[in-house]
Length: 335
Image: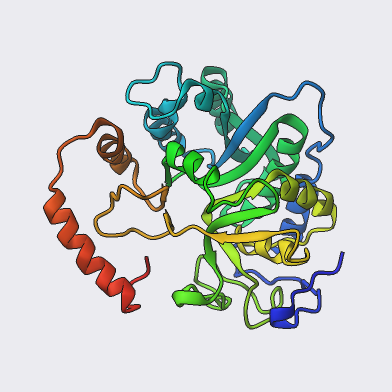
């Protein structure tokens, strides 16, 4: 269907991209989108129900990250987990999968098969694995979710992001979320408070957008890919559109692009500042829902601060936070 949004005179043309040499080519990206749509999307009978379905983008070779996540915040989903702030009912209504593409070697296939046999928490889709194919992987995950799980909220996170599951639950059931219909939430890039929406044209940049693929001077509002939330009705609509979707070599922008085609009455875009794409000072803050850009070694310390209440210098943290917030307010640093 044609895409349009009034704020940028977008005429609906998503034109072929010309990725930097050595990156995913247009032909490969188009094939990745085709493969994403081979994922069955027909709802199966007797789907398990859940409130939150969390998909964590990962890849072959990142087993250490997955092991760290299982040992930290995902451990709260185990029966009778110590220090868990989740009730037993909440724990049963949160499900997760690590989202992976197709392995590239026989060794990767064998390693992932062994990991799946041990943990049973991998979702492997047919999309080739690369940074540039994250969006096709997400499209495949939407289709799998609609077919497989009776969820209320679909949540994406990166495997270097710490998710405070109890705070995510609390936010989703707060007045700030506003209910389960038409919700698209996260750290929203919408041009306000320095949250830029201008495409990055530097071919060396991670989020490079070729002008041939996106010729406009701004994006519609979109949520940072580090963690974003979609209500079920929006995921179902995106799945309906998926066979006609165009390849994008970034994960987060196209979600906002396609949802911009909906009338404002169908989608509510909600900014959640407690989802942090950047590293604040200090790194641990009690009100944070999601903290991005964390190394595996930092997860255990963060978990200890959040749930085991290990001692920390709170006065020093408060002083550092005050200086950091001052610089954020002056637009010197991003929150």
